[in-house]
Length: 560
Image (cartoon, rainbow, N blue to C red; front, top):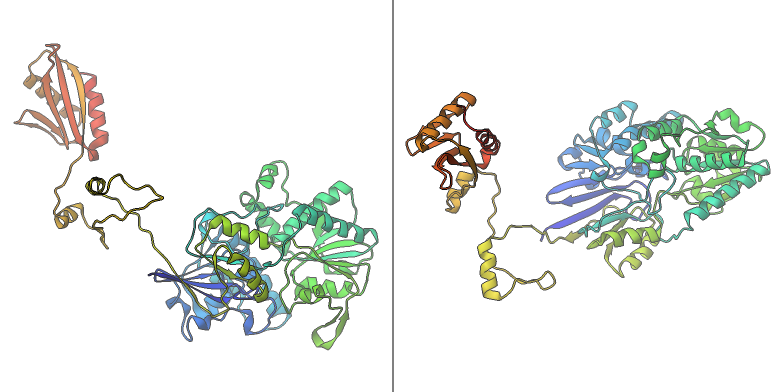
């Protein structure tokens, strides 16, 4: 039986570095090629040695499909294509192709220009990598992270009841059941407002796209409604560029934003301004969105260091933080942090976790699985212990796997091939076995399935199968008033058509017919009217247009 083999090269019982190798029908497809936020060594990229120990990946991979632009799904792409070596096609959606190089370049600047790392891809490598990308439309691609709840800028995930052989799902929040979206938004606004009222500063670490836009829309609306004056900033030009692309791809956003786009673009913010690093030292309350989202580097970490010592301030973590990042440490209650250069940082500011994640919770994952009804389920992009719990729940209804990195899961498939059944075979089965079966009570039928591996001409196929060609012809009757004899009328038709259809082959045949290409015209007298003639036109399907034209022409009569 044919098999589908799935091997995680990253995100197997781990969050981040998403990279799944799928082997199906003799083809090897890589789904995503991300990096891990928690590591600064070789572990930050997927281990491509599982594919080949030496040589380029082009010889072993047929294509790469990138689900979306988050770095844990696309961050290793230039490393794979330009440093390891891959020249094949890379597929992603149009917005992902537009935004991906911006995030990759920002990631490179932080890693190389600020941290001084050397074994890393260059700006030119990012450009060369993006030249290999083939953009696709929305419903032609796979989905990486998903959420079953619509937010303020994107709709909810959905899937047809397609009953696939295997469904691969992320499981970041495998054991979490979130409050309603409305409750989370209300709590978020309340915390921000309380901190501002007491003169504190609010830091919201975000990745530049997705969550940042959703929270910007939420605060913009709240500031407008409450007439608040405290400044809101977003750091660097990254979110500014991101907002530009959201405006550009407005048709990919949810229905509400598309509807209001004519009156007002929701991504043009009145209360939210660009941040300058000197503003971090300004007195008084403020709200700052800063990248990246896990406080592992960049401007969010710099601002956090400055504000951590004041208990009036607050940091709100709106998404998942992988192990090893500052974000993960403070969410787990750590109040003394060891920073670079062996210095320690006392954390006195308030730490809040409010999930506005792009990932589905356990309820959402189960909802998607029940929608699709897969024969097998495979979990990736989640912590091992939490995945194990969710796997137990899924196995009450479906087969489920959760391979570690480098571990291959193989599932057998039952390919279904739609075929046409001959009418004679159906009639014979009815005679032999009674009425035909209904779908709920299938019955075995015995016959011969004829298949060809290559395309051949119809003449060759008929010859090999020992069949005679069956021709399909169309016929049409036309009434014509003409007092002459049948042979004279036919000759007048021939003369008329010769004068009108100068570019066609027209023949007056001895058997008493006129032929125009494949069209045959015969004349007979009407039994009811001595002056009327009945013209019978017959043509093959190839001359359908010409046959229709001739019938219309002859209905108008012959010239006198």
